[in-house]
Length: 265
Image (cartoon, rainbow, N blue to C red):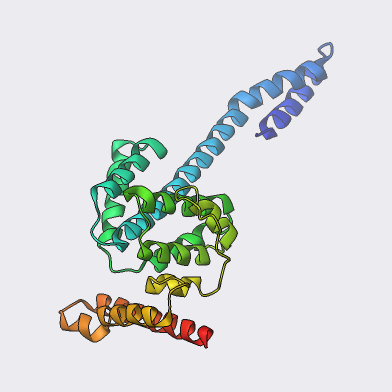
């Protein structure tokens, strides 16, 4: 709140009234000057400061919405073509969670579609979000919560979706306890909850479970490796960006299998 105008105008009013010889001139002069200073100077500055704060808040909200709809679009695409349940979830976010205007809706729908059709990997969007909001911990936790809600929109949790959610939790520096607490808001918790293991993200990449024998995991690894082999992707006439993404995915698959095999020796 601005007070500079009140003080300066009050001092001027005090001096003028005192020099004029008015009874209690200093007191009345300061009071009248302070009132004029508030009306002519401070109130305008307070209004301008309030406007700047509001515009900054709107800009920050816009940045958060960009990340929400980009990440939820990438997650929706993770388990195959986007379905009606996932589109309905996006509409609920627009209408009820964020209460966007028609113009705001048009903007976030464009963001959602661009991210859905982009070859940019989910992890890159997640890193960009964390760089922007790392200091706002409540927003980071809210983001993971929203992503779980997006994954649950069609009623299940696909292994590929959980792989991305685990990767997001790692990039957001969210521990397993907090991760599970958010997860079990949307999915029923097992009677005996598994202990966190550093291998969990690798099992998620392969769509495997720690309880499965190695030969089963090996079959899943081979299937994924064939599916994401860069030469196979390139032979289909994919873009350079798609080939680059396939190489990264192929490396992740190989690394995951190697880590699991090494741990089981």
